[in-house]
Amino acid sequence: MKPSTPLGAHRVSDETMRGVAPTKTVGEARARKPVSALQDVLTLFKVRVTSLVVLTSLLGFFLAARKSGVDVMTWKMVATLLGIGIVSSGAAALNQGIEWRQDGKMSRTKDRPVPSGRMPQSVALALGSIAVTGGCALLFFMTNPLTALLTFATAAAYVLVYTPLKMITPVSTLVGAFPGAMPPVLGWTAITGSVDPGALALFAILFFWQFPHFLAIAWLYRDDYERAGIKMRPVVDQTGRVTLTEILANGVVLIPVSLAPILLGMGHWPYAVAAVVLGAAYLAFGIRLARLRLPPTAASTKKYARQLLQASIIYLPLLVMALIANGAR
Image (cartoon, rainbow, N blue to C red; front, side, top):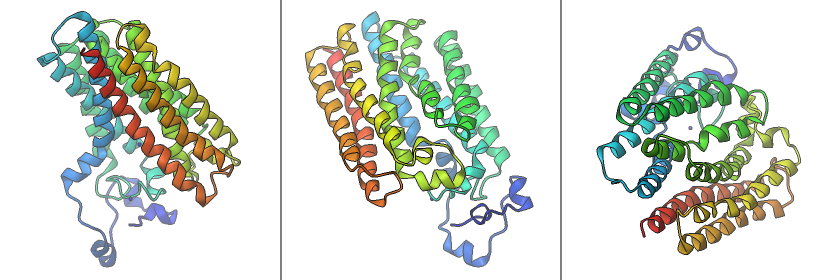
C-alpha cells in the first residue's frame, strides 16, 4: 500500500479545509476522467490491500481448523473473512480521512476521494468508523470476543499509532509491522479462541515479509513521501545503507522463519521446499537492489525497487497457497 489540487500548489482553500469539494475550473473538469461514487468507495476501502488481508486471514483460519479437526467451509468462515475484511476496509478509510493533506501532496495518492475533493473528509471518517464498528460486532457475535478485541486493537494501532508516527520517525515501519502481521492470527483465533504457537508462527512470517515490501514502496516513492513530510526510511537515509541493510536482514531472517510451520506440524517437506525457494527468490531481488550501491535518490534504482515490490506481492500469495495445499494433505 494518482490532476492537480489546491494542496498540490501548497495552498488550501477554505472549502478544502472544511472537507468540502473545492471549485474546479472548466479546464480541470474536462481534463479529469469521471470517477463514479462506487469507484471512490472502493478506493477509500483499499480493496486490493483488503483482499490480501482476507487471504492471509483465510490461511490462519484454514490451518487452525485443520489442526482442530473442524470443518473449514462453514458460515463461521464466511463471517470471519467478511468481518476482518470490513474492519480492514474501515481502517483504510480512516487512514485516508486522517492523512488527506499528505495524500494531496503525493502524485500517487492525490486523486484519492478526499484530497481530490470528490468526498468530504467527514464522510470518509464516518464510513471508516461504521465499517470498523460493524466488522468488530460481526466478529464478536459470529466468532468469539477475543477475535473481535484483537481485530479492533489491530485497526486502532494502525490508525492511531502507525498513521501519525509516519510524520515523526521511520520507526513507524516497525510499529506498523505489528498490525500488518495480525490477519492470520485473527483467522486462527476465530477457530481456537486463543493465540497458540501456530498463530505466532504465521504472525512472524507476515512480520518479516513486510519490511522488504514496505521499504521497496518507500524507496520507489521516496520523492512523494519527502514532499508530504512523511519520514519513511529512504527519506531520512540519504545513502540508502540503512534501508538496504533492513531489506536484506529481514529477507534473510524470513527464510528460516517461514519454516516454523514445519516444526509445529502444520506442513510437510513440499511446503519446506516451496518456502526456501520462494524466500531465496525474494531475497535475490533485495540483493539486486543492494548491489547497485546507489542512494534512493538515484533514478536508476527505481526499476529494481519496483521489481522487489512486485516480488513481494507474488511471494506472499504463493507461500500461502503452498501452506494451504500442503496442510490439506
